[in-house]
Image 1 (cartoon, rainbow, N blue to C red):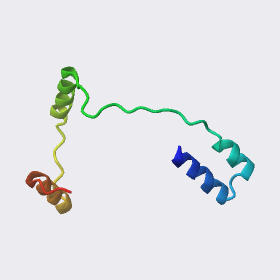
Image 2: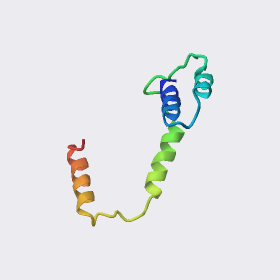
Image 3: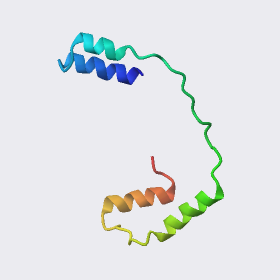
Length: 81
C-alpha cells in the first residue's frame, strides 16, 4: 500500500494527475494480508519434475567468457556472494 501511495505522490509531483485525482486514488481501505510459512511442503512429484527438467537441459555450457568461468569457479568453491 505504501508503494502505491508513493507512486501516486510521484505522479502528482510530475504533474501527470491532479491533487483531487491523487486524493481519490489514495482512499484505499486497508486490508489484512497473510503470508505462507517458509519451507512449505513440496510434493515429490514436483521435485521429480524439476529434476527431469534439469536433466533435459542438454544445451552445451557456454564457458568461453572469462567472467562466466570466474562465476562458475566461485559457485563451485562456495565463495559466491
